[in-house]
Length: 415
Length: 142
Image (cartoon, rainbow over all chains, first blue to last red; front, side, top):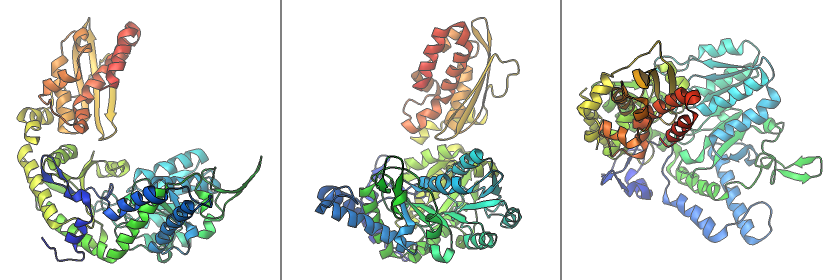
């Protein structure tokens, strides 16, 4: 089953214990729900275990040996993450609970300090709820406006709409996903950032779906903020990453108050800690941040160019095969250069939950529903879609299994 | 497994739902959704004496949720409220012939019963607070 291509998939699969699992009465697991969360290689699981077994300790404070080892391992991940997205320094990397918390941190801290009545925040119709709801909360609180860039029928953002919004001089922030978690559309963030900066408007990039799947360089892109999640890139759950340009971060008020984010606390005043610790109140998720370091190592060894190449190939194959099934509607761009490995579709009048149940019989794990993107669902005028999403360990044979299940669904529903 | 679920009768009720639509002179209308998968059901009830004189549902979602709602309306139309009040999870699963649904899909099958119970909570709120409370409690475990 050796596959020729960008990655040695057979070798990769051997690193993921869960891929040996049988489901639904003995079927090999075909895991195609990677946009929700990815599986974890043994090195990540081992790194977490090693921490708890051998040097479990709180970080940054105690002077004993375990604390020192834990602090070094924790901060090593920060260095690796900074390098992974080419941030200028580790001071620009903040660990949160997840990408959602990272986005909320910006809305709460930067947003409350900078957004006033009648200001505007510009997002898009393809955002995940985590890049919508924090801005609804903020704009409601401040009496500001939330505005949307539309998406066309092929899944591309209506880029010309940015100009008219930005011309108003009221826009305080542009926030946009780098890659749609439903349509797979890769957004031309470089153009959006350039246009916005020309008007002096900072840009936040939701990198939850892009950073795990392609090379991302925050300096080249010149984004002001970026949020993403460890668990969508082989890492454990419970770790989000927020990148903020240093000059912006220096002016931001703190987020959560408490231990670790302070230098001195007196009865009525506090001197806050240096960057990035000022934004990391309380004991962080030490074990999982350390585990995430192993995940970043793993991806570095593969090379993100290769990861992207592998996914382009799988996505092309998946689109060809899925659109070959009678009654299928595919959402999002068809050109694989413009999209990532997230393929959303519907077939006939089969509801995605019913399709997912049939897929599950074949051991195929796909996602069905609104994918936390109900604004987009309304725009597409569908209640839900089925979504297959790929990663480094997926194969064309697995897509063939998905097609078998899809044909079975057609048979059952007589389509 | 799916062969057992997506039988002719389920597909028939999914594609040709019975008692679907609005009920302009309804005594009670109630809406609920399943936030996990977005299935939505509205139920409209017309009560006469102690009987459900008329019932309609509106909704969108998977075949299981919509067929179950359609079959529930047929099951309770014309029946005394006292018998409808005590309907259980198993009554519904037997009614639709799906006793072996997994935890993820059982919610779909039971959404319409939950909405019906909530509708009756509303109906009984002033008339019979004790029944309303029992129905409210019943609906929580669905």
